[in-house]
Image (cartoon, rainbow, N blue to C red; front, side, top):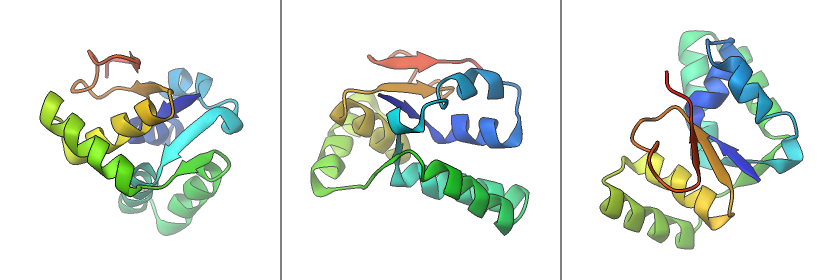
Length: 123
């Protein structure tokens, strides 16, 4: 299983410089996990930079993957990881989601690059 963070999805949808790298990890939607906070961040960013229709198309594509809700257990785990690694809230939720599902996290977020089970692509 793979979890691509918000930056990776945005790169993919906007054909950014790392779109090809992220596309390799998005080829099998049934093996891709999407935390609900990633849906939020991608929708917000694409709507702000493009338009609502583009944002809705992106969300529709992401919904072909496995959506992970923010549960009570995941919230507590994320809070513990935030304190342990000094992460931002969204990063902690994304990382906790990956760990909960024993998934590889694919990201370009330098705050996550040295953590276990993370594949990092420098920006």
